[in-house]
Image (tube, rainbow, N blue to C red; front, side, top):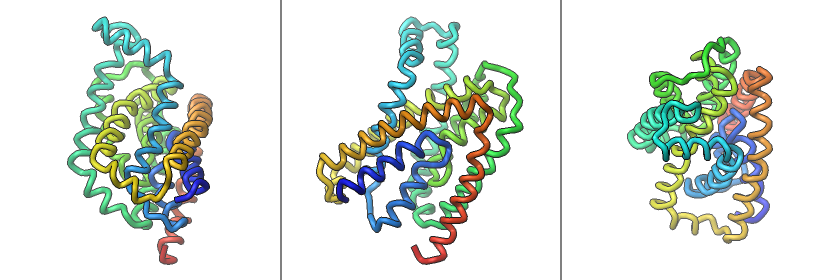
Length: 263
């Protein structure tokens, strides 16, 4: 990869990681169109930029969570989220450990990814019918949302899209659904990134990219990711979240055409 290609992939990662349109799915398609065989560890490295931005974007809320955890305070507003985050992380980890390799193999081609985008669009669209009834996230709701996060390792299924959509369908208020989705992403992404870097760090040499080019991709994903995350919060609050379903369906048609065309 050269500098332009890593920057392009960084833009795609930063834009699609937080918007509910599947960063992994877009990266797979972009890498195929660019003729690149990129190891998973590079995609993981791009996630480093977006997770840093998540920590910065939610720095005050995360600080409050850590203070509550340090005090073993599970009754304050922040403290009540600690146990649900832990409960939601468990199914995510289990799905990744037991089904990650099988999913990676099954969705290595474009046509299955196109199908995943259709499913993702369905959940985004029906989220418009969710009734906001509660700001509390019980343990069973956290487990359901965490399971959705685990399923979102499928390329073409958006992590933020599926978790926020299901949270809205479960009657969780929009601002709380948005925040919980990203709080839940922090341990999952950090854990997956750490494991991937440990197991496959040597594969970065296969990209033929220098550290400057890799760093450019990460920094680009950070800048674009911050803008995307800010935009997504406004979109969720303004009840326009389901509009992304139409993009997912449109993009799935494009992928089907590419797949049938031999890409």
